[in-house]
Image (cartoon, rainbow, N blue to C red; front, side, top):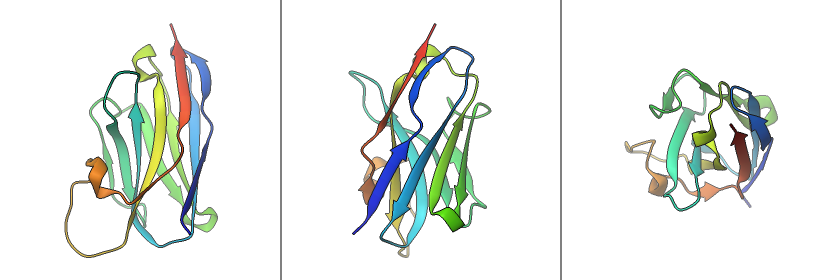
Length: 125
């Protein structure tokens, strides 16, 4: 049974940092990603990484401020959030894609098979 357990969210002032973690278990995954959803908005892509960690992708809003990484020994996905802005306030979700053939867009919410419960990040001005 696949389980994704997120942690690390919280309240931080603008310009601060947080590190989100996502412990993934119960399957073999080819890609891992972070999405976020602010109140009244659609869920949006933040960043993705492949199993080996050698290939990463970022949304424009995340590039240069956020860093996605994997620790395969710990089955854990991370998202380092730096230089946070109030507009980064959202529930952050980790997602995983089961290994299978074929190409896909890493930014598509429909391309991931399992999702975590979400962790709240609130950035005050």
